[in-house]
Length: 352
Length: 79
Image 1 (cartoon, helix red, strand yellow):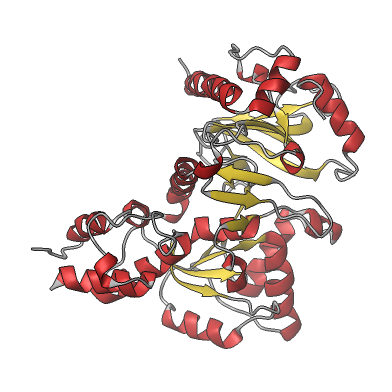
Image 2 (image 1 turned 30 degrees about the horizontal axis):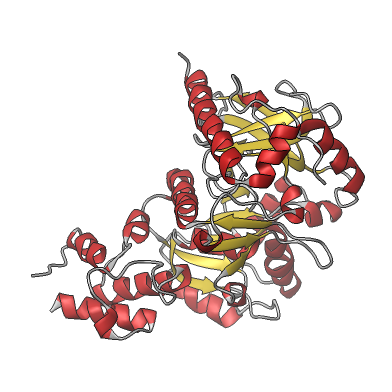
């Protein structure tokens, strides 16, 4: 059996189990599936029932008792937008942390690196409920030591602190982490306008959170990497794609610029109108699958992002798994009432 | 003595009384030992024992008893 068939069988068994588990532990999920007469056990990954990711903004969905809720993650919505709420119990939170380590260790190694957070310390203020930013920072902080928060609360750079940090760690590999837009706006642009260049040559930068704001400024991934290299000398820059709505889906950019699926997660591309699965090479809506969401029915989600799968297990970088790229949001994702209900009716049954 | 030293580190980093630091004290069972405090605790252990815990060990360090077990790997002895 090929490696990819092995993975498909493993994922199918795990995901079928999760569908059944959530069916019997999450009443709204059960109703959605029964109304659409969806089978609980399917024979291939493309038939696993999926929920639109926006649903978590409308309904509190969880498969655990209220008092087992250990942490609530919220998506980083802009003002006025509704945010998703994702309910984690201890086991799911732990699985998330472990998964992140498994995915990142090949890239970062086992040794914790001196770490620069391109964010404010303020983002961790509320310790029971984390925004996507806070959750990302906490998750990645396990790879670092001597964490230095680059930004003051007003988003200006702590230059003195930075110089001191770099002096202390001048012969070491440094890990930088932050959100794509914030790195561009508050680190790169600020340094550029001050004419400050750094030499972080032996460092690695991990960033995520989406390209929407940068696309508006016509900043592509290539340009982002080029400019950060020119300004800061950072040679190793890796984007990641993920969302708070799906624990375990951490897709990291390889040296060839493609996002890869880890063993416990997968992606399927679907036609935005018919929702039929599309072959490799064609652009459509990204569906994400993960074996980790146990506390809430988020193991199979249709996102609002457009992407293309380029192949599986044969990326020239040597990493395994399906590899893909993300083109951005479907246009007008916020005006979604009607189209959502449509998508939802069609696929899972009318509930809203 | 390392047992006492580790106890003080826990009490200091988590902001709790030393009497609360027993072998059964576990991560996420008291509000003071959450993921944010865990980072402070790990930093303090690194500093005080002059070691550098690996990422795996940071995650495995889930109780006071477990901390002692992990530290033995770094040649810190507990009688």
